[in-house]
Image 1 (cartoon, rainbow, N blue to C red):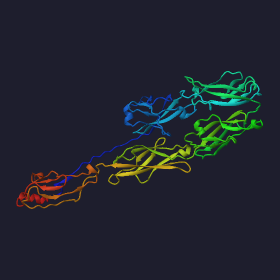
Image 2 (cartoon, rainbow, N blue to C red):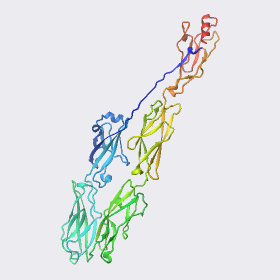
Image 3 (cartoon, rainbow, N blue to C red):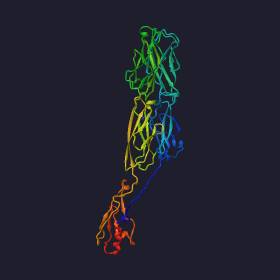
Image 4 (cartoon, helix red, strand yellow):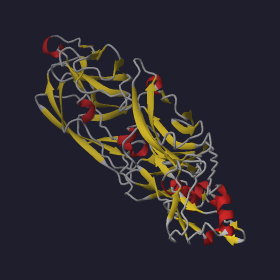
Length: 529
């Protein structure tokens, strides 16, 4: 039987998709709200402010990205467009005494990639009370001290800022001292001379008040012991000391040495050093030698946590007179953080007929270090039909560079390597597997170009004459072959009245008994077979 007797039918459906990706960084959004708001509190509606409908938030997988921290301070409700608080926000923990506390977040849309930079201005609330370094402050003052003598005392500290910070001090009324506050330096001023024979000890109550509403306060008792002449307080060699130290410096690393002298002799001139006001956390990072004034590292210094420290250091003589100086410590960055790779989205699997230059994934890289130590280059291996294209900020797009063929390669292991600019550089890698989806792009192919079959006359109807076989390189349904006979006639009679084919196996069967002597059949079978 010739080619006209039968053939395999198949269908090819081609899916051709063109992806056009626009990378846009649009205008900033800014929201201002109070710290310590409850979780779930709404601080703004990004859908309204960006002028997009709610369906866009869902279809473009809108989300909030926050760099440089493991905390997720806010999130977006894609059903309402509301930007809401998702974690407790403590302004003091975030920004300390900075006048402005701004958290930068990214609002990311996909398909196409679009980035909105959002500034969260965290407003201070009066949630901290003024605190003195100690509950009892001891001073020793000579009875020979002249009227108008000034005695510096430790100031209070309030973690809040602005009006919520300390606004004034109040000294409980007494007959000997008044309070003087100038340039944030608090001092007792002797208004009436002391007489040790009349009063050896004096207790004064000093109160610091902030300007919040409601107002908060903190107090300290100043215990004054009246002594004989200690005429001179220690004097530091510098009003401000400045130093720099690399992060991750080992314990006992010398930061700086402060020095003060006292003109008095003996016990009155012996100077010891101590920290003035310093937060509990900072106190665990530094230590001071009381005799030498050497300030050394005591804990782990991390530039990514704090870039500088400011502390007060006191010099106290043997009878209690004390002077203060300021120490500013700058922390130098080291390349101690490995770049991190985040897979933000991935189209997986991708059809093998995907167009060249199609974006199939979005990669974000982050490095907590600063300047060159935090500048990251991202790359993938060669000899694969993909490339990384730098997009916006620290985002990269994974782009196809050539035609894919599932029958040749069904999946790709793509290794992404991120390397910073530090010296020596640090790097990290992430491997993702990208599968190639099959399309029906291969026709069935017969194992032979033609088939011949012979049959004895008077055969039984239903007997098998021969079998044909074809293969298809495609996968599953696309590679399944179904056999059928092409329509035809034998001298006016339908071919299907004589022969049939099994659509699954390719077996060709006789539907009737053949008679070789029948001239009509003989002639036609000789033509067909």
